[in-house]
Amino acid sequence: MAHALLRPFFEAHQIVADVLCASASDVDDETLTRRALGVGRQYAAQNLIRGTESASTPLFATTRQVANDQGLLQDGDDLQGRRAAHLAEITGILGDLDRIEQCWLAQR
Image (tube, rainbow, N blue to C red):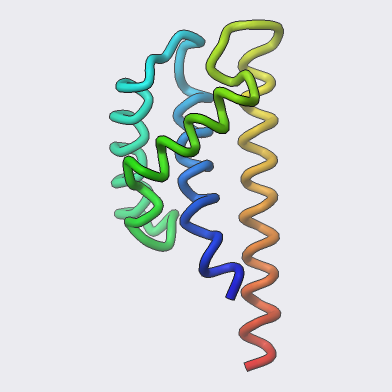
């Protein structure tokens, strides 16, 4: 069941990472959250995320803190490259969760 419990958290990370990749280096918290909520609603409508719980302000606050801790909110050497690498890492984790889910379904 790990895939079901962790998916909203990592989908929120993916949404914020997507927004960061498309944002200027000096994006503020309010703008980042507003954009992430919009992208999250869009992804939910397009079935790119499993549920609307991934597109929530509380999850985005946690995700924003992780991005800040990883230096993805401060300008510096190759910021866009670091943001893209972060997005690729999150995408990989979501792929891993898909594989875990497939194993779980196969065992049922």
